[in-house]
Image (cartoon, rainbow, N blue to C red; front, top):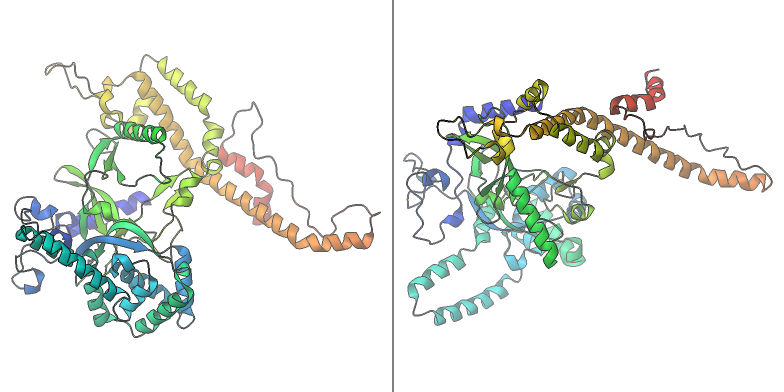
Length: 548
């Protein structure tokens, strides 16, 4: 089903010519940097240049460039606690549907439209939705004007640079969204918007910021175009430094070792990298590359996480080169933030607790990390392929002199060729007439055999892991039901024991008899049983009673 869905999405992107569209143009590119060139060559596509449309005079500016569609700025978000408080206030006067629409469509853009010094205040965002200026803005304007006058007097000798600096300061990033949101409210604002915003403003002023906390999310991007962005539109490409998998792991180990030595390890790692898979049909086979945007990046690295994202990232081939294209999932309106689901997994409980999601949507999971508990996801590995079995596979591969036909076919089935083995498959000592330097035959037999054994286990785990997770969930629910039943009958049990007296035998009359559950661990020294048969054998009576 997943493969079919990917084929349909690829067909849609190809038919619509998504990859041939120019990227969305950012308002921050027009920052007074006259040395930057937006025209000519590949810059027209990479910087979002769109030719002027003579039939539509509103499609370009005075310089003949396309109008800005997105803007980069500091973005803010709310956690699940704040979202619940906001919806509770709105639902006191309006329906739950209106509360959800107010938070996702109007309140979140209004928070990002506030100045940085007022973005933490929920009342300031509510005032913007009411058509008012945020409070304390006049006081800050006075102090800002004094600081600007001092800066102008100090830089009189550099009048040309001073003019560009003033233009940059006056066009602060949040101004783009503020003007776009004001225009959107006047054009299509619902009748209940000002009343709902007034409720939030009064609640925030009376209850304080502790009940309506707003947290910074860093640098992000928002839609400011008048017509928004259409579905399946190319926004940008995820750019950065490209690393092969083995080099990327070395870099992570070096960073982790340095952080431990200097005692600088953070609670959460940086999420500026993205995995890019080479397709199995590639001439060099399947492979994994990592794009790191921590040092060199583009617009895509500023997108925040959301449990209900507005964009998705797809691996595409354009002019013979693999790229990570970021396209819209649906029609986006003015003021919406450009986000995508990070889909990151962690086994650290500490990282999971610190990874608080700030998307503010109804579908919010509470954390932008998926927590993979060791007892749940590692039970199939621990039962069927412990560390001793893996070392045995490695030793057996080192004893082989000839590659078996089954192992070669298994590598070919999964697309493992020279790209997966990296630099090991390249022989620098082969001359121009001595054969192909990049060949799978250059990879040692023991390594290919060990990889084939690992792939063989992965095939088994792909079938066994869902059954193991289902079994674990059923056992957890049965335990919860037993605990609930025990708590329910505990008062009756104590009352009957008091009536009988201390001489009566201790017997649970009212409590239900719990069925004996067999031990879920295999017998020591026995061969591990496949998970499916182990699960069916332990729940045979449950299945029979359900069928009857």
